[in-house]
Image 1 (spheres, rainbow, N blue to C red):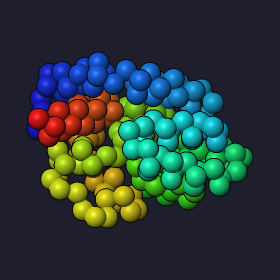
Image 2 (cartoon, rainbow, N blue to C red):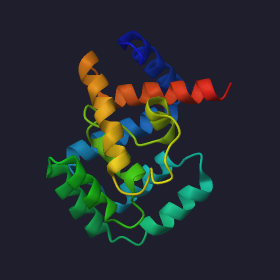
Image 3 (cartoon, rainbow, N blue to C red):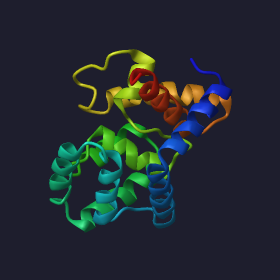
Image 4 (tube, rainbow, N blue to C red):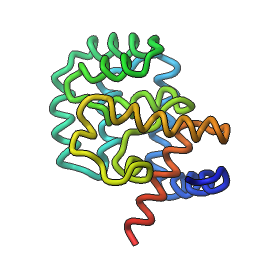
Length: 177
């Protein structure tokens, strides 16, 4: 496991190497915290952010997301942001067309980066090795990963998102060499 200094160094590398992601996340997160909800257009931007480099997946998810009524998205997200239980939050977001654990975790991370990190195979691999084929089915794998991220964040007095970005960046950099 990384120590606090290593986490902060990997996090800085992520921020430096991914300015578009950092800016978009900050802007959307600020909006979600202010409005306490998401619009259909906002959800589309979250999809763009999460699947920016995966065009086929991005386009497929956007087609599903467009099936949601704007009012349904807003009501669901308002309710989710008022909830306290992680499993309930994930299941409620998962009820929206096109939203699975990866996208639900991204919404929660943008809204509350101190408490959440993005569900991603690269981070999973850093903690648990090869991902199971069911990693993005239901919220069980995400909740397992989230527990590990929170343990480290609490130990080092860091945001969960900071820890998650560090492990994401470490995995990406070390496996691409």
